[in-house]
Image (spheres, rainbow, N blue to C red):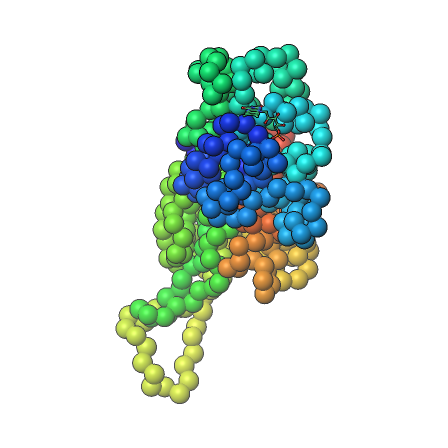
Length: 408
Ligand SMILES: Cc1cc2nc3c(=O)[nH]c(=O)nc-3n(C[C@H](O)[C@H](O)[C@H](O)COP(=O)(O)O)c2cc1C
């Protein structure tokens, strides 16, 4: 099973007996690491109370579309943008009909129309309702629109009948939901990611470092693993938990990061340098703590090796992506770096008082030879997934072009 850590899930609950299981679904999604918000249809509130769903999700339940109060808080468009995925469980026959028609006359169906996130429905209904031609043609229409259908299962039903139409069990729905994120876009490829700051020791207790938290690099490593890659994360000193399904190599200095990154990049398909690597290190590291005796001391610095340029100079070189934290003139600075280091893509990152380092949100400008793409401000895990989608497409386009050159 995949992980739901850092995932934002919107659970839609519609009016069916199986709604009593929706509270358990929320509990299990949260146990798997997801943040969950709930939308209930008016009928759903007849089966399970919004109070229960609020208590288990830890957030107020969203119920109304045409409500000025709700819209001034997290309204339908914000909910649609917030979600990394939407799961409707249980999905009633009536809701499937609304979804098939693209209706937008209640909050849940409107959010489903407005979201770019993947949507899955878990139908639950009496077996006659399930087998009815109208339901089956609605399902076919829903499926054709790219919406995933989880289940239903077969067995004894609340109405006393036996047959297809039982909602899948909450544990199975959580597993299937986590699989929505396993895109397979990087299947079979090895990706090396660097993350975090470096620490350049001055003496045993002091050093030069920077404000990088490592959050973006860790999110990129996780997104690459989710996309099916074998991922090696070369991490500077951070307080973050090592991502699952990723091999993490811990380093301290820029020189150590350089050596580890180069060794791994030599056999990788893609290299993504997210770490904020110190450009300079002290020429000497004192073996004992420097005492406060002299009135003035001078720290001599020497240049560190350039990890990105050295990775790009490997023969053969992996598809090389570099991050550039800039405060101004972002595109021009990024393009200059792209050309001088001879890399494939620069993800330029505006750093300022409330964006970039240490913050949970960021935006990126992806600068490539002949192409610029903007990824707007969003939480780092979501941004990392968008970056990985873009890198996978650019990598495939480049590999395709190389094969074409070899043939022609
Ligand atoms: C006791 C009872 C149980 C119901 N169970 C289901 C059900 O399991 N599945 C279903 O599709 N509809 C069921 N219905 C019908 C829906 O509640 C009804 O179609 C409702 O309009 C659905 O609204 P919604 O899709 O906006 O939530 C049930 C109705 C009642 C009265």
